[in-house]
Image (cartoon, rainbow, N blue to C red; front, side):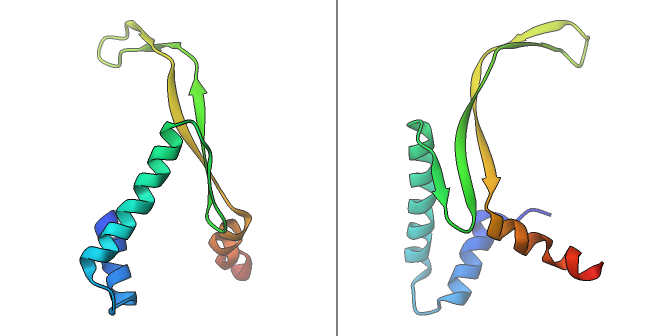
Length: 100
């Protein structure tokens, strides 16, 4: 099951009823657009307590076409690498540690 942007907006609207939904949507879009802008400029983005986003350069390689098995050249490209923070990791795994 996925958690999509509209659900984040719904939760923000429920948590902060004093703010207009359209204002919360603008703020959410502003934050996401700033992350995208900085990553597209080659900058790293770190959100304390959540994680960090870094651009990784993938090398060109030879792949296979799944339909006929022929070799296909895959060009070099950039990819976003995300690493969760230690705080996030601990919160994510605290239920597993309590069950043991």
